[in-house]
Image (cartoon, rainbow, N blue to C red):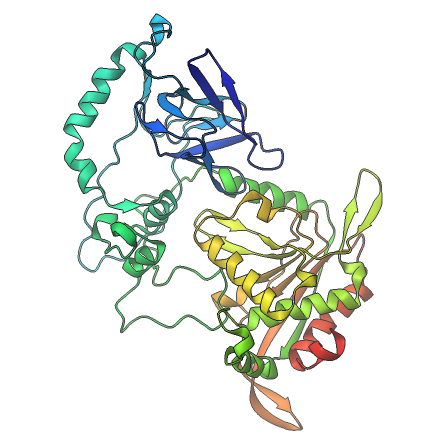
Length: 467
């Protein structure tokens, strides 16, 4: 939604829009423009973080930036003016008080100490919020109009060399580097024009090649950053403000846990044939260009199980005391990102053939890893899969995504002794856990869904006969 106002024929204001579904505030993460910069219609001027995701905001008109109303790190209510633009520069009809543009002093990024040789990256939290008020600035302050020009000249003059030497990286990449304790000045860029990418930061965080272990096949967006070894922080306590995505996660999980009566069932299954199918599909020309892994087959198995047991794909409408049966499946995939756990979903996953599902799954995972998941991509999910196996975990008791009736947790796939055709043999085995809302999914229905998923993974040819 585009929000703007006109203060005069010359100056136009752009307000913080509602970039999600009913969101009330957002934090300004990064300004991409400064007073005096020329902007064009559709140009991204800042990045903000909502309770769901990081979003870039484009300006809806041409002109010259007159004023930034809030510094980076400020939480702003939806509807508040965040930037004013002079749409008729060079004219003399501006009020006297506005002859010098008011500037919000942008904090000069503190140089991070050079990493000592052999230093391991440290996971850190987000910036500290001073209070619960809306205008929370991490650093810097608003500079009134009369002093703005002098301050800006001082910053521009003395900070020129520093600006030139500052590594080139997008805001999500800078955030990732900060969270991993990586000094961007030490990272070798591989992006076009010398821009540091997420892969460059992960490479800098990884241990020496001799120590690195290959990622497990089928790792999803939940896989932790390679080589990250947390170190004990100084002091006895570290306080991390709960805001943004983390705050939304906490509220949603508490609401889900204490609203929907959860039931979790488990099954351990031999997935050796599924792993063979994955290997075969990787060589199939029809699957060229898409990523094939166990998660793809598990997702397809769950979709087939839902088709056979449609009652599990529903929601509880408390206000109307109704069960809302969904005739479509928006399949959520839980993904751990630097901003916290998010659950984007594949729209109308039930209609997708295996190559289409693989492409959609690959796009979902890469978008989440790059921090580009939009609020719309996380809305409207019906059933979710969470792959805890990428952490080496056997199983868990997942909490329902709010508004959904079921969530499937997939444990690690590993060789175990298993009775196969009357003999004990090493087989690829995993444990599945299905949590469901017992208000609308009874034990029989939940058990049938989980049993169907397990049966397909044990004998994946059932995808043909059942699908």
